Every structure is written in structure tokens, then in C-alpha cells.
Image (cartoon, rainbow, N blue to C red; front, side, top):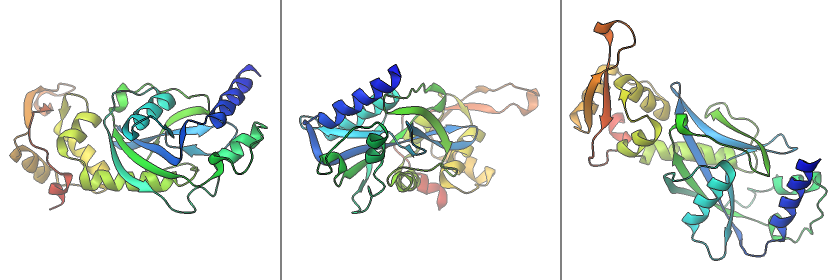
Length: 255
């Protein structure tokens, strides 16, 4: 009962706030890489069988990028994350399955239908790449679960957040450079196989091992380290790490 009252109080404070920019929100599509699978971080609403990407509203005295970083921290406790705008979502019907309305009704909070929270919202999408193994997330006052999902096995999504994830994945495939992608989705030291698995997971197609390794090494952006001994010594793969180097597009590997 105490937790339910706290949730209700926080929701009431949110809708009573008059300092938000009306009709504008920010949403963050957070990707991680774990066990050769690309995953996305989602939040589940209290009392609703709906999931969402972390997001929120923008204060009047707040820069848009700062709003994205703040809401990401408030919803997941993630900080110092590389965030980049990737798309603006402005379809007229994008909020027709008004999750806010359902959430407020379930908490018996009466809000006039002319209130800004029920009106049309244009959302600026941000993309983040993080190391899955370094992430510790927690649900906030509006959510009860914070969980990773395979990008190809999504649950029921709120609003147009499934489309956000799909466009975020396309953004990765088309625009994320080699060094930024690797430094965020892999540990500092990694094997060539782990790097290839990452590329294949994002690109959605297999790559020939010899061609991939030859292409990567020709870029001169990796430093080869000691071997990674986990079994037979003659089969131990080398470890690598990234050097400071010009940015290389993942599209180079599709040519």
C-alpha cells in the first residue's frame, strides 16, 4: 500500500508540473551486446502489460540533449552514456494507445482530457550503446521492471516504441562507426570472434571469417595483445583492443 501511494503521489506531481515544454518528449533506445545477441533495454509500466524505452519530458530551461541524459538517468540510473539523436517521431496517431491515460486511470487520478499529457507529442529519439556487463539498472516510480530483451523478440510495446527500436537498429547499421560501436558494446579486450559476432548481430547477416579478419586488420585500428587461454594452447585466440584512429563505418563491411 505504501508503494502504491508513493507511485500515485509521483504521478500526481508529474501531471501538476507546469514547467515542461508542451508536446515535446525524449526517448532513449539503449542497445547492449550479450552472448552474441544484440539486446535493448525496456521498462514495464505498473499495472499495465506494456513495455517502453526509457523516456520523459523536457523542462523549459533545459537543453534537449541534457533532457535525454537526465531522463535516462532517472529511469535507469545510467549516466555518462554516449547518446546521439537518430530520429524524430511525429506521426499524428503515435500516442493513440495513450499509456499515460491508462496509467492514471488505474491509479484513480482524475485528469481533465484537455491536459497536456493527453495531447499530441513529438518525440526526439536518442540512441545509446553500452557495455551490457557494466549495467546496473533499477525501476523508477512509474515502472516495476527494467529488463533486457533480444531486439528480435520484443514484448507488447507502448506508443510507437517498437518502431523506435526498429529505426534505432537501422541507425546502427547505417551510421555507427567502428570505434564508437566497439568501445561501447565490447569490453576493453576482446577476441576477433567476439568482434565478428557483434558485427553480425547488428548487421543481421553472417560474415565470412577470413574476409572479416582481413578487412579489420587492414584498417590498422586494432592492437593485438596476448592470447586468451581458455582451453588448448594451440587454439587460444589473440585478444585485441582499439587504437585511436579515424572512424570507420560498418557499411564498409557490406561492400
